[in-house]
Length: 274
Image (cartoon, rainbow, N blue to C red; front, top):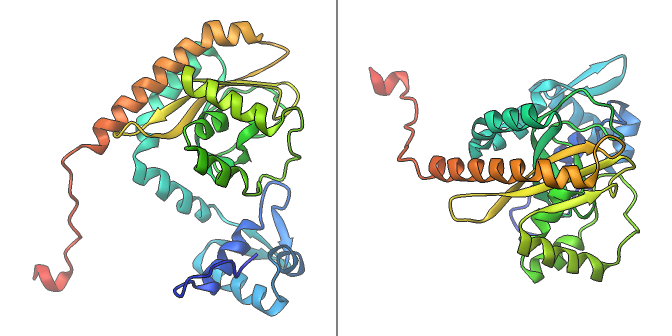
């Protein structure tokens, strides 16, 4: 997987280390050296050096010859979310929305042709797919993904959809590329998207855009229900208005947060403060 860069400043060893981290997922929580080397497309000695380096840094632990990620990996993703200020703003709104609907709500952003979950408040309901922070799904098969795709320019959309999904799910075959484009045009006009059992049987959701201070769609927020419990009519009639209001409130507060007059100085060293 490494060696994709073409620029003169591309650091292949860094790319390989990130590839090693990306090998681990819900289906591969613990992996042997050989499995990591195969998954990352690396020679065993190279994979070993990278794993031992990551272990020394605290991102990987080894037990009886097998490797697994540590919670420290979360700091990489949470640093991104924290830098946006999005989680601190969205959390109380998501909690209120979940309390009013009794259904789970999440926020996701676009990464290639996938969405990646960056915030979530859930309720204990059995649903076909497990969702955690960092989970990725094909954007075109989700309500949040369709909201984010609809915000792209035509050229950006073509480029994005051309990228292979890294979610590990089979592609959705119930819609042609032309039908998807038509649906995205409609979503762009009405301001919300529905995904009705496109991602997995029983999973139905509706999503709305979250905008930054410039009005650019930067994330999407959804309400997810079990299709056997909640009809499309109830989802759109009862839950969608609450979702649209919540997404609007988050967008407004995010815009205020981004415009705050705030500058953080570096911590002085002992020498400079003496």
